[in-house]
Figure 1 (cartoon, rainbow, N blue to C red):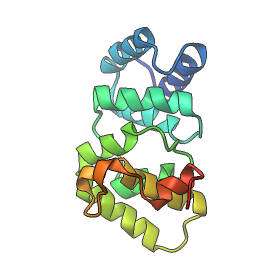
Figure 2: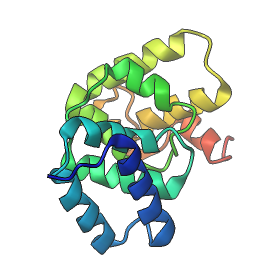
Figure 3: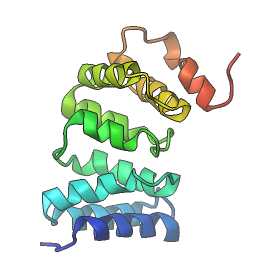
Figure 4: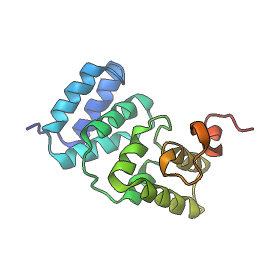
Amino acid sequence: MTNWLAPEIAARITAAADNYSPSNPQQLKQLHTALCRAEPREVYFGIMAVFLTPRFGPQEVAGRLLIGIKPRPREPLEEIIRNVLGTWDLSVEQLPWYLAEKFGGSEVLNTLAALEGEGTRTEKELVAIGTFRFWLPKFRSDAQPCGQPDLAHKAAQGRLP
């Protein structure tokens, strides 16, 4: 059993991304193996803590671990999304995929719509909501052919018409 607590897990994920590459297979395997032996609650909170700091590398590693380990969520869906909207790196698709797998894609989309409807979202958060939708095309009723991004995703890329 690994006795790592959530802060140490987040620090180790960040260090792996900083010292190696976010896609370094050896580091990912070592982290995966260690986290599979850690307390599940600590694993969940350690991985999710990485999404609270807006850095691609650590979030990419955390996303890959989310998909590989599939920890049980320890918070309500709305709270998870609300916490990461302002800091989640829009190119880390694993977070929306994980949430769709654990809560259901339709539930994720409904939660995004409710958060968007509050009318208190910043422009950055609205772009994040649109990008969340982009990463979940099979659940969207307005899915565009060939996976074309919606306007919010285009805005995130600076490509609005």
